[in-house]
Image 1 (cartoon, rainbow, N blue to C red):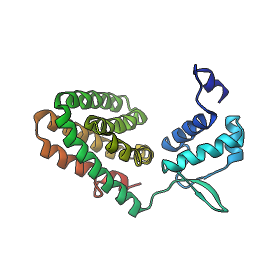
Image 2: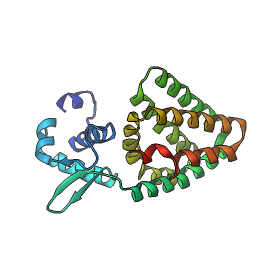
Image 3: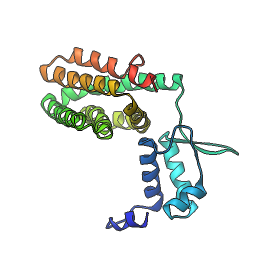
Length: 218
């Protein structure tokens, strides 16, 4: 943790550094769903006091990545089937709306952004870089949100984005689903480039909706 701080001219707070580290560990699967988090253990591992760890827990709880239970402690989030369905439903509403807005804001720019991500995705798959691919998966969907140029939509999306990133990591154990995911991303980008927005939207719904197979197999 001390080495991390040296790389900043104006170092962020210790709480931010701890939160960033724990967020990464939750997203990459180092910390498992439902895993108990110990202030003492984490403080010792990251060479900080318990106060920034406690503050980091509070920040991550706002993001939905951890939850605190009175008299029990703090735990990495876990997802029930009903909660996953609700997340998928929220994504459909937000991302299809973002797609429509992004096309209006500028189709050419959106096509360029999505095409660049899809190209990187293909290279990641060729290199068997699953972790890199999954990060690009998040970038693809974020490009739709950013393209909408609506701050309120962006804020709403961020309430579920960290949990979706953690869920995506678990897809690394399902190579066939990763390949399916890539083909759907490429189709969405191509449809938008061709001006076939209705088909792009339908493909997006099939990709992220509650019936989509990738997350149900977790």
